[in-house]
Each structure stands twice: as C-alpha cells, then as structure tokens.
Length: 137
Image 1 (cartoon, rainbow, N blue to C red):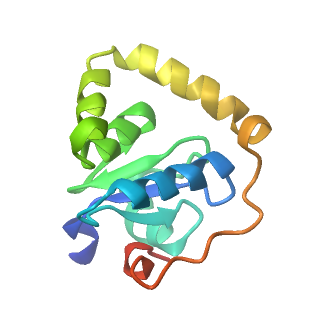
Image 2 (image 1 turned 90 degrees about the vertical axis):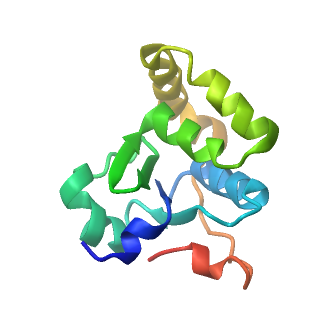
Image 3 (image 1 turned 60 degrees about the vertical axis):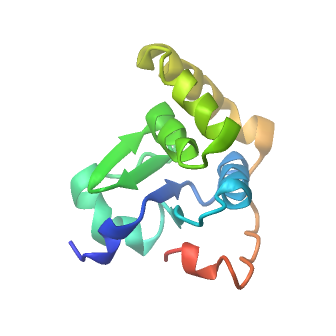
C-alpha cells in the first residue's frame, strides 16, 4: 500500500448520500487543523488502496481509515469527530462510553432512513481551493 495513504485519516462516505455529504461539510467546517481527508466509497482511492484490507464497501456505513486500520459505523463517526477537538471532540469521547451495540443500533436506524430523511446528493459541492487537497479520487 502506498505510504501516502497512511499519512492522515480518511473518511470514506457514500457519494450519493445527502446525510453523508452533510457530515463531510460538518467535518470541513470544524476541522481547523485540516487533518481529515475525504473520499467516496465509490472512488478509486477506496477501491485501489483500502478495499483489500477493509473489504467491499457497504454503502450504508461511513468508514474511517486511520493509521492502517478501518473503523466502521459509530466508531468511524466518533473517531472522526474526536479529531475536531473542543466541545465536539469532548462530546465524541463521552459518547464512546455508550456500548457499541447501542451506538451501532442507532447508527443502523439512521442509515436505513437516511435517503428518506436527507435525500440523495444529486450534485456535490465544488470544494474551495483551500479544500481541494483534502479530497481524494
């Protein structure tokens, strides 16, 4: 696996999901250090560099690739938002005390209803020039 994939955490998301796009926008707004990168599960970065380790993408889950490890569902969301620091990071650490089975049950419920509640992303927001380097193919 190329070294560059190991450098910074990557959030893989369903490129067609409105909720996923909102999560990415949230992360962009609050990641002041610009640490987290983003790529669609349907993209070549996941297919060529992560899929062999993390498995075929399940479009109902967010995956965080961090330091050579794949995190899924609520673990991916909490580990991603923990990096934001401040109140959001603190809240993520507190939420992690809730048992994974409960967190993932809530995650699965939202995931099953995400298109009904948030719709499909019919177009992506064009990243600002300062954000372009944070998006992988």
